[in-house]
Structures are given as C-alpha cells and as structure tokens.
Length: 300
Image (cartoon, rainbow, N blue to C red; front, side):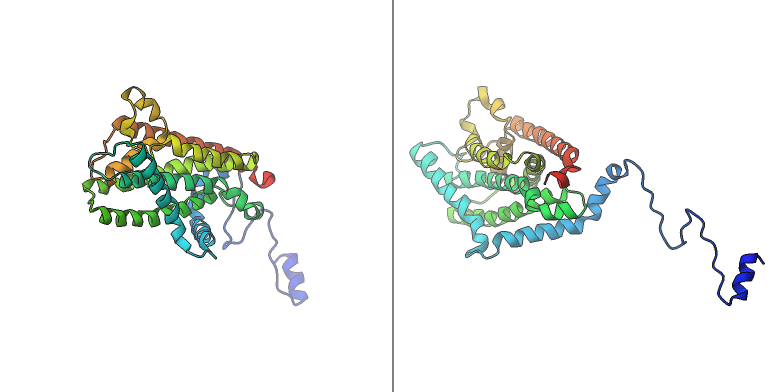
C-alpha cells in the first residue's frame, strides 16, 4: 500500500486516485479540435441541423401570413392580376400568338408560375441573413440553412398558385398531357437556380447593403427580359441561343411544355443552357457564400 493510501485510511476518508493530465473518464467522449475540421464536416453539420432548417422554414411561413386579412390568397393575387394584364397587353392588343391551341391566358400563367417562384425565392433568400441578424450573431450553425429555409416560403406560394392553374384548366377545358409527369424536374431546376443565386445575393447583401436596393430593380427587369408574357417561339432563331443565356428562358419553356400538353415547343438548346447555367449558379453561390460565411457575425 502506498503512503497516500495509508494516510487516507488513517484519516478515515476514501482514497482518491490521482488525476493524470490529459486523461478522461471512460464515459466522456473525446473531442479532438484540429485545423480544417469545420470545413471537412460542413455538409455533415448541415444534416445534423436539419431540425433547425425545419423550424426556420415554418417560422418564416407563419410570419409571412400572420395577421393578414386574406392569408395565403396573397399568393394568388399577384400572379392572377399579372396574368390578366399580360393577356390583355400581349394577347389582345399586341396580338402575339400562343403556343399551338393553348389559350393565351394559360400560356401566360404557366410562365408566371416559375417566374414568381424564382423571383420571390431570390428576394427572400437575399434578405434572409439580415432578417436573422440576432440569431447569426449569437449562435453558431451552418449559415447556409438560412437562405435555404427562406426559399421554402416561395415554394409554398408556388403550390398555392399551382392550385389556381388547375382551376383555370378546368375553366378552359384544357387537359394536360403525359408531359406533366416531368414537371417536378423543372421545379427542382427552378429551386436550384433560386438557391444558387439567392445564396450569393444573401452573402453580398451582408457586406454591401446597397444590394437591398439593387435586387428589386433586377427582379423587375428580369420580368420583362424573360418570356413570361409571351412565347419564346417569337424570338428569331438567329437570337434564340443568345436569348437562352437567361436561365429562366429554359425553365419557363420547360414548365409550358409540361403544362400545355406539348403545345409549347421543347427547345433542347434552351433547356441545356438553363441546366448548365443553373449548375454554375449553384457552384458559384455556395463557393462565394462559404468564402464570406466566417465574417457574417462581424459584419451583420
């Protein structure tokens, strides 16, 4: 028996084993902190915080329609009135042609669906970090969750607006074809385009607050340079490829092809360019977001 154990027995107190520096109890997990660990485990941290993503998305949805008189009907008013104006201006006054036998109102509304979704998603995502300044300044979590959760609000608006499209199809006695089965593919493409651009805009909006004035102007301009109120078929073949560099062209054309029973032409170069440019948006948006992410808490 050691002298320490003898002294402990003589004083009537239990013997305590000496604590060795660096040793941990058996039931305590060992945490290793090393440089670069956060970068390597970033996507794993995103998955671990999926419940926070759900909470933020549900909160944004609740706040958007809280204390409103007509609630989710606001998601119907904007595309409905825009469809009416574009149908009168482009269909009745300008006498622009529709796609095949599809009614001009359906042509416009089928283009309004993806445009309203993408424009709302980008605007919501761009302001999401500023709107959650208190949370970002106090708690650590992968910040990419914030703009992604903001896009869910636009997705809910899209689903509400899609219900109105079904009513319009019944009104015009227009039945979609088998192409509608591919609609989720183009919804996913619109989501990715909005996510990539929205993540990049949200990061820039934290550092340069002027972007809160630039984004509404850019969204308004995009409405008129995208084929929302008219068909892409009226664009000359000589300029069609150049016009298709706008990724919304391929997305809108894809929506119309799926919803209008194939009456709208499926222009492969336009769809291909939209996929390529959307992939670039996602890569560039995530890359620039993560490059600036560490400074958000200080700048915001």
